[in-house]
Structures are given as structure tokens and as C-alpha cells.
Length: 136
Length: 89
Image (cartoon, rainbow over the protein chains, first blue to last red):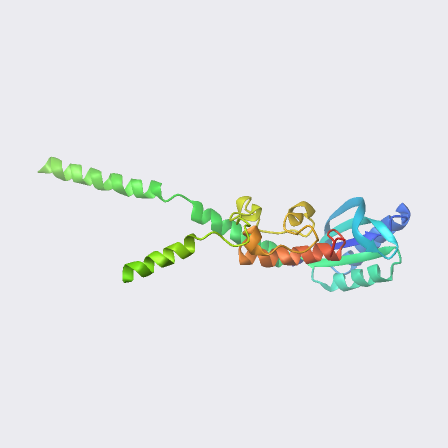
């Protein structure tokens, strides 16, 4: 299973109805192709870092989904043909996240202190020594 | 003879970097243990781009080459979706 993030910017003058209709369309597309939307993030109206067409602002929506990848093609096609979507970006996240997780666990292992084990061994040796000493 | 050579090498490494810019050896990425660099984290990415919008070289930021590669990817994604500028002014 792959995970994706689809981000798109819609024009600030878009009707709320149109945006929610688009969102439900995306949900439908994902469901039809065996994908599942895990989260939808709406940043709302935000200033663009640069002008796109005639817009200085845009409404940001982020859709997080998991699936096989087939639904992405259709969602992107949908976004492309929708007039009020001024920019979109799809990012596949599963591999990078897995790699990040690996780095994290690796760091944890290397941070585990070794000294308690060493101390334990040392204690054992001492006790044995004392036993020997007693016997002699 | 051998002693002189080692002395010379030592002096070389101790020399201050040219240009007067001090190295910041520990970056926020290492300090805060960020493994996944998200293109949506505008605040973080902004600390790695120069005033004019350019990506800072890692000799100035002190990130590792692996981190720099991830950073570059994230910054380019952020630019694409208009979270960061390609250029300023």
C-alpha cells in the first residue's frame, strides 16, 4: 500500500459549494479504485509566494490517501480539468516516511547506554573473585 | 623534518575560514532530530533559503549531504505549490 499527499490550490473566489463538490468527487474517485482517504487538511485562504495567473491568494487543500496509485491518475486528471484549481502537487510519502522511521529507530539503538550491562558483568566477576578468595 | 611538516599541517587546519562567515556546525535538523522534511513546513524551509529565495549552500548551514538532498527536494516542492518563492525581487 502506498501513501500519497495531494495538494491543490483553488482560486480565492471559488464558491464553497464548488470546493466541497470537488472534495467529494475526489473521495468518490479514490473509493471507486480501492483507495482510502485518511485525512483532509484545509489551510484556507493563504497568500501565494508568487503570482499564479491573476491570483495573489489561494485556498490550500491537502488530501492524504492510501492506495495502489491508480486513483492518483484519475484525481490528477480531475484537478487538471477543473477551472478553479490553479495548481496541484502529488507527493508519494510512504518510502520517505519509512526511511525516516528507520533513521529514528537506528538512533534509538545507538543511544541505548551500554554501561549497565558492563557494570553487571563487572559485579559478577567481583563476586566470583570474592568467593574464590573466601575459599582460599 | 617530520616534525615541521606536522606543525605546518596543524596550522593549516586551524586557520579561520575565509570570507569571515562563521560556520554553524549544528543545524536545526540535527538538533531537533528531524528525519522527514515536509514541504509544508514553510517555517523550517525558510531558515534554509537566502533572502533572495535561493537555497543556501550546506557549507553555510551545516547540514549533512543527506539532509541537504532532502531539503532541496522539499524546497522545490514548496516552490511548486507557491508556499515558497522561486525568487524575491
